[in-house]
Image 1: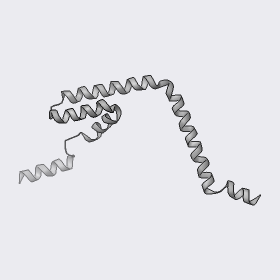
Image 2: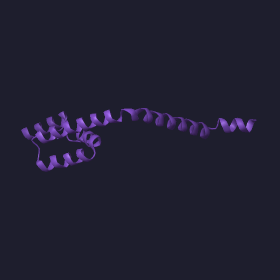
Image 3: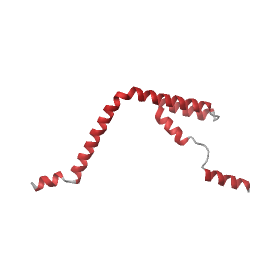
Image 4: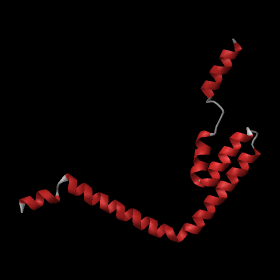
Amino acid sequence: MEKLKNILFNKVTIGAILLLLQLVWLLLFFYQLRSYSTVITAIFGLVSVLMMLAIVSSKDNPVYKIGWLILIGLLPMFGTFLYLISANKQPAKKLRQAIQESEAR
């Protein structure tokens, strides 16, 4: 009885049970999400098309724009996410002030 108690309340056993429960929950979540897949895909497509139109209308270098358009066209949500995070070419406010102060000297 003591050995069974040690096995059931072992850290590894509890961790494995919790991991299994998390996996079951994740599978059930994706199973429920499956019924909304066409709506989600349409929303993602619309967002990526709007982002591509914003990129095309920007005044950036055409080569720069083509690279982003290809990435967003191949991987719509990942490309859009990367563009929103990394495409800001303006330096931060403190850096911009430091640059202006050094240019004023």
